Amino acid sequence: MSEMNVGDIVETAYNSGTYIGEVLELKGNFLLVKVLAVVTHPTQGDLHNRGQVEGVAFHERKALAFEEKFNARKRMTKPFAGEVPTYADSLKASVQDIKASLQQEDTEFNKLSLDRIADLEKHFYEKIYS
Image 1 (cartoon, helix red, strand yellow):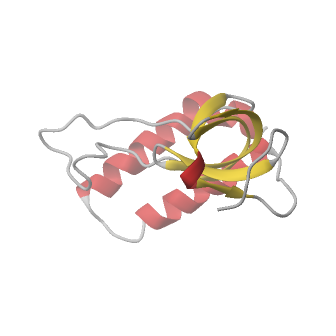
Image 2 (spheres, rainbow, N blue to C red):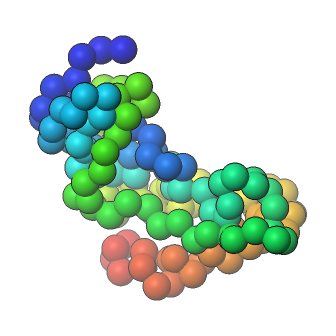
């Protein structure tokens, strides 16, 4: 693992999503990171009971917002090399990727996940896309 410094651009996982961000602060085993782009949209549903829809709380998870700050684990973080996409473009691409993945198999979990993502697009993301 390479040493991280304030100002570095990194790729890191947070909950079930992956983001590109800027390191704002070093905090022991954590880094305070400001979101610049979305790599992988968070998974929908109950993360402790993957694939299940009955008898579980099926959560709707939004991607972290542009410039939202979060504590990332150092061990889950790596330097990012390349051009950082715009937040809107990266969000749209990550949503399209997760939708394409969920559409590959016709299950109740995937249908409910697609429904939650459609709701997120309608109520939150369409404002960001445009």
